Image (tube, helix red, strand yellow):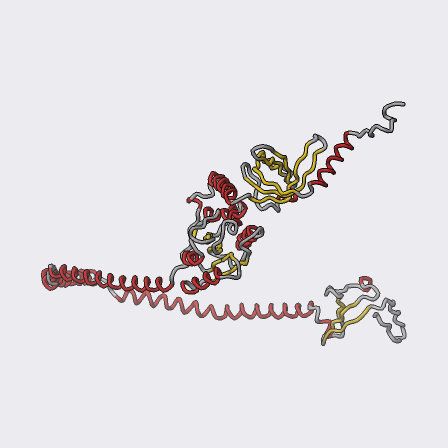
Length: 462
């Protein structure tokens, strides 16, 4: 008998059977494990999974975070972080390795969180997100102010009270949670929502009261920092107390030490503006008065150095009077000379010659007038006779003439004239035009009866 059939020998496993048996044994024994260690060899795969190694000073365990669990992690896996993870131990049968499937991850302490934050800050600074050149100026007199904060608590009351005391702006409050895993996502969504909101805010305030590093950690989110950087609306961050610093403070356009200070940064003091305008108006009036008085004094001083107008006009007036006298005398002499010349030219002229010529032309005109009247009368008589004959011809050719004698015209529905019986179809609607009006008719299609020689009744055409 062979060794395989010997009842004392254990059955032989296949490699797959043994590998999956070990896998089940590990998963049953270590279905929930809480592990603390340092992350190394962190790889974010293109399919969304994260592969990493958790180690301490003596050992290392491979780990994987499936894509569905990555979004639920409280922090981003990064090289060198000390973390506490939970999950289960399993094996990868294809290579006889065991690994940990990670479901949750949190920083092992404040030091680890701050180390992760410093690495993120360095990376964003290298990208230029903290540069002063990209920061937008805060408007001096905003009409609409957007506030992203918790709808309850002292923060929103302080902001609204401070804005109401300083400046008559319209305030839009976008309520969000300001602590916990959902806070960063809600603040990011509110910031994007204000960009499509009407009326669109002129400035946005993101505010939260003080707290521990863990309480304020949601404002260190990378996605939120990038959303603040991409914002087209100027943003003031007022997260925590004056000594608290979060990532949003570095990417915002202005950082306020407190929410109340943020309200003061976003609004001017209307009473101060009114006082400034009043003071400027008073200074303007005083300056204008001084300028006018200075010009008046300068004009008076300049006028003293000018001669009197009588002195300026005396000599030209005298010259004018002399010239006028000479001109009048010259004109008189000139007129006398021309009168003498005219008399010499006119003396040979005899009015009698002109009168004889006028008499001859008058007689000629009389003869022409005598012949003109009969000629005009004959022309008018000939034209009148021609007009009368044309009127008679017009009446004889008028289509309405036969209507006076009892005839009628037949028109189709489109207004055209029916010139023959063959052109009309049975059932066609026509219009009969008489001398005293119009009547409608319908062609019945019956041929008219021939008139009897004895003069019997005539058949109807319609």
